[in-house]
Length: 227
Image 1: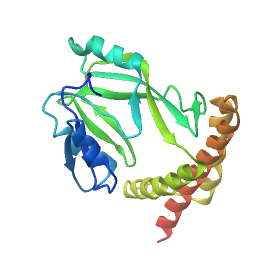
Image 2: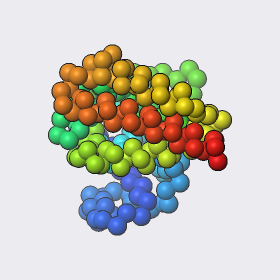
Image 3: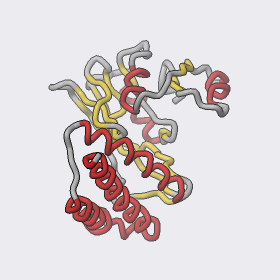
């Protein structure tokens, strides 16, 4: 982010590693704030910015040289309200170009007077005001997702806890039928329609795990309904 952003802010939910030390070594404005949810945490960070135009990255993301050039080319003439770009994910050392994981367009630069974080936890997204203008930039955002399959499974269990509760709070319900056909369609979609098989072994792993995640979400939602 150095050389791109005029101000660097990190919001940290009281981590116990060297995050604070590293941030301060690089002149980052470091703020600790209890984690209340993905959307809530990112909107908290948004309100700390000194400028209207912001760029938001997660801790496991990095800007490529090509994307950096694209951002700097528009920085002095921000004629659009928001800018998006593609995200390319690395899974266990493999760059995933299918499975529905790429191009994975993300809106991460915008005028904060024209949009805020929204969506449903844990799947946050920037929601722009009606009529806001948007431009897509060239270059990829690198997403270093999981180094092992076990990490992926832990996140699936964690995320489905959050997503099932969020869905239940919005009035959504599950059933045995949904627990069967939703995961089955997810595998067909990601492995065949979205060409997951072209990602080889890791494509199969991702599609199986995504199928399991879909099942687990609806199973947990069904259990919440019973309770």
